[in-house]
Length: 417
Image (cartoon, rainbow, N blue to C red; front, side, top):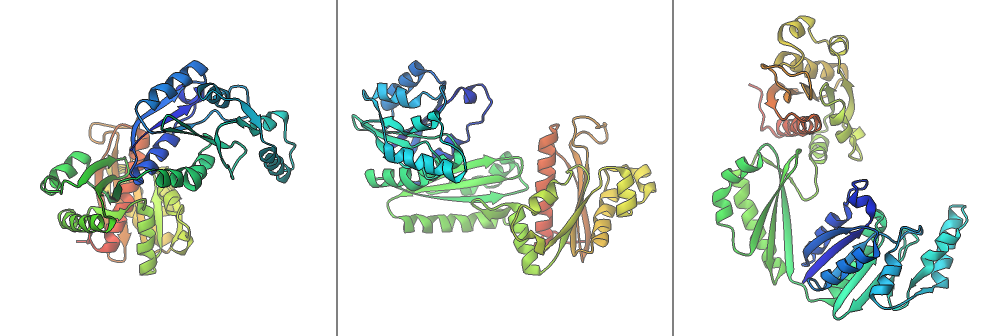
């Protein structure tokens, strides 16, 4: 079963808005066994939209359209769909009443432009929108199903989950696909591929492997195709066990888990507390740790020691070591980790000091040089890394590396000499 996704809006084509909807929709379709043939973005232009719909209908059985359903003049999706399906707009009193009720709850009047959102193509099946005022629309033409939904992400996701995906599953006989995503850290894509190549070459024909890298970590997604879900799950279990034996220390989680979530669970299990002393990461480690609900149970605080003065005054870093070795050094980052652990009285601590860029590098310490230390009751471990020339990527990589190093310390993978 093939599908296409069409996003409508000039704001996407000029880069004002990033199209995250298509990626999410494609992922959801893939999970139920629908393959996405093509993703297109088109302007708010009738001719362009009509041509895209006509061409898409020749390639796929399901066409999902997002955007262009607002109350303003530039939202032309509904009249264009009327032209494509040879129909007209008709007013729906019940839908308008719900729009009025929504505005009444917000203590706002429903404007004339909002009233137009109750005008819908006469021959469509209406898809209710419980999160907003723009209804979705379902059409069928020569065996192809066209589904038009709002471009507002939270409205789109609700309609896809509640109405669109159930409709597709009920309407079509879909294959069974089981995905398993394994989260790894510490090996780049090419290095990981080299390390697991023998395992990958021996994967059953029913399994496809995808490498999904990011600055923070690398996801391995196994997709198993067949007739029986239980059989596919068993096959994935066997292959996952084989993979764990090859890269046991690099696997930190599954699916949509995050390093900070895994770290939090480890700290809770140990009933241990943690703090951070951050220079080049500027509080990003603390931000991620505290993004997890319940993190107050184990995270006490952070000192963003961006200047040498703060490193010396608050973290008790030896000024002589800064002069001798520089702020980006094993000696300084070690003292930062020990200092914040003592000052905030925590069981564990993380510290970072580096040259995020784009300036400040030298031949000895180029941009991207970062020292990371993790400390605990057993002592402290500091390691040097050289990342990239991009400031944002350096901060993200240093943060994820620091979290993973602490994960390994808590698991006993990193042992103090």
